[in-house]
Image 1 (cartoon, one colour):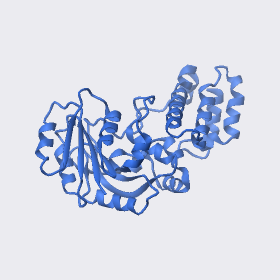
Image 2 (cartoon, helix red, strand yellow):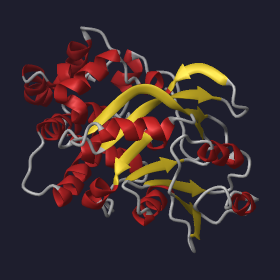
Image 3 (cartoon, one colour):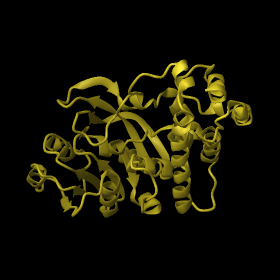
Image 4 (cartoon, rainbow, N blue to C red):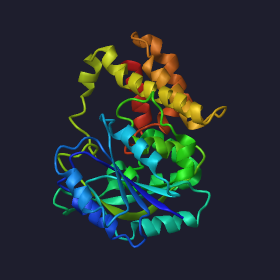
Length: 330
């Protein structure tokens, strides 16, 4: 059994030493550390070379910048281990992370991907008091639904699988690569791997935190909360129709492209949560401008239970009916 770590770097001198030191300290040794650098102009390469005698490292430098999605795909594809751990340059790991996740997967041969929670820290490494799952709203209710077989439905609502907390089997990666080329720019490697594993219920979570997830101003991918102030009812009534349906059109396009990507890897299969959600957003995205013409589409979403099924997880019992009224009269 071989262990690989896939690390992607770009101007990471500020935090890279801490991450590399945490890899050195693992209680289960790494067999290979595959690094793909995106053209760093700071001391990233110098720092990597300082650790080359302490880690079984191979360093690759991309001729052109690939971006996070493609760079991680390339790094993971180069790994030869049975188990692969994606790693970010600015986090740091608990010394038992690899050992505990590998032990978990060894005991569950039917699982291809496992992921954990993480502790949020600031740029100085100070614990914020928050956890990654609470920020992503992966709470007890969602965890119980996940255990009941609803992992795909939960991930279609929003990604909960963070790459730096993940471990995957090489055999699984071979099945789902190359990564889709038709997805929007905000779609990341961990989202694809999480969704692909959920299609056949081959992904599981471990309710523990083995990563210190650093939040800072220079990170390429981070955790953001809601930005801005929700519009008032009067503002919603006055806004142009295109502004009303725009978010639904964007979501419909994302789900439709995801369906195409999934069909390439899992042909001749249909996945009900995805099909139903596409139908739901198709009705909302194509609401007629004339309010009186919307009744049929909105009633179909209400009667089918889709407003209830796809409402925001923090909304109240009356939210589905407010969504129905909003689609009807806004």
